[in-house]
Amino acid sequence: MTSTTLDQSAGLGDWLRRRRGLLASFALLVAFPFVISIIVDGQGLAAVVNNDLGNARFLQGLAIEVFILGIYAISYDLILGVTGILSFGHAMFFAVGAYGFGILLKTFELAWPVAVLVVVIAAIIQAFLFALVLPRVHGITYALVTLGFASVFWIVIQSSDLADYAGAEIGLQGVESPAWFLDTTNERFIFYLLCLGIFFGIYVLYQRIVDSPAGRVFVAIRENEDRALMLGYNTFWFKTLVLVIASITAALAGMIHTMHQPIVTPNVAGLFWTVTALLVILIGGMGTITGALIGAAVYRLLEYYLDRWFGGASGLLIGAAYVLLVLYVPFGIVGTWRARAVRIKQGRDRLLRLFTGGDDGRTPARE
Amino acid sequence: MSLLSLRDVHTFIEQFHILEGVSVEVPQGSIVALLGRNGAGKTTTLRTVLGLNPASSGTVTFDGLDITEQKSFDIAGMGIGYVPENRQIFAELSVEENLRIAERKKGELEEKEEMIFGLFPDLKRLIRLPGTNLSGGQQQMLAVARALVADNRLLLIDEPSEGLAPVLIEQMMDAIRTLSEHTTVLLVEQNFIVASRLAQHYVIIEEGRTVKAGEMADLVDDDETIKRYLGAA
Image (cartoon, rainbow over all chains, first blue to last red; front, side, top):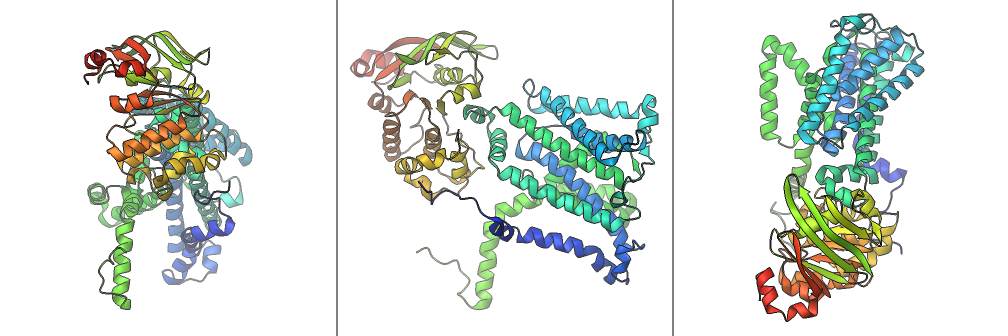
């Protein structure tokens, strides 16, 4: 029978209509450097393309850092927010990408597509390593085991025996850009566009994943794994799939980080970098996907501007800001917005009716 | 011939010996009521069949196959559906997504749509709402409806009438009668009146052991057994 009740798949037109906001954000971010160049720097449009020094160039760099953090955090949101796997070793996923790509380019002098391929394979292998313990430990125990994996990695990359490869405690430096479009120093705008494209591409891909039948199983695992098992789903393989997707995504963020930063420090493999991902999705809204991107922007910009304006006191202010966010935006920015969207819409409609003289502003009675 | 058979099943949950010799026979095409007081081991029996709390000894066979050591998802894949107690729907998924996730092959929900919404018309109206917005009764209906999506040969239903208003209990009983026309049912039910009106056979469990089994028609007239094991008369 033809269903009229159940949701039918929509075409491209409908997809684009439903993502007007996303497309508008993309267009705004493409235009952003030009707007800064004209309004703040007083330079022309060509200054952006010519990579001239100024606020436009600097802010593109800051935006790239937001994109990297966003891509990294979205992968953690898939693991923790969507599927409910508590991992404290997520930084290792990022660090394998960052260090792996840098070492392959610098020490082994591989062509960049080959280096990317090797890093992706390494990311898949480490995801299977993290999946290996899934059937045996759950919850906080799994978190501690994954923290153990990441800690071993963190110690290994700092070891003096590997100093020729990873730069010991100083970190990996001197990785040259392997292609003109990956050159953040000389082709900032091109690199910015590339990162922006990847950032939005990953976002759309993740939305599709979460909305897919497999995505429903991920949510089901988070809510009640026994029920998912009893519906016939081998939850181990679904969780492994989540780890593989997240590991590749975080490694991709790590590779971009290596291209963008002059030095890859061991901090990107440490617990604080995992906590950063956790903070970002808490700020944005856990399990919302969109929240990871918004949280990344809030986190990085807050960190940068508070540090710039208040110097040494910024740490205290950042801490206070997080406490306020947790208190007043308990489900994160996107989560709280969604929870209160109906009331906000009702208030907005009432306000509109007041101004347009539709009625006296009171909620209409039910018919 | 029994579709499901448990023979002298023992199950531990951590160090606790919960089932200490449960035997149940579920004939093909019947409704069997699993009865007993709170804490007798009824839900654990269902979870043991499903492999969620695997048996440490004894055997569980389904359609002649030993499934005692099978994984839960394989057991479900053989055609055993489960309607757990306390609903346990996926709260953040919509009604449609809750139904869709139970599909074992694409398009199964569309095939069953008419039957499911015929039994539970409320669900059609609520199709886009997240499970968390449903009332307790609606959630229970959704839990049963979800078990109807896939072609299950055996349904394990745990306390379907728990917490429901009388009018909803009647609706739920109608639904179970309808689905039992195509599916064998093992029913855990505290409400003896509901169980006696639905089931043809019964098994009573007391402190993790099977103590009595037989025809429901005989049990209805056996006040002493009812009073002794079920605390009702």
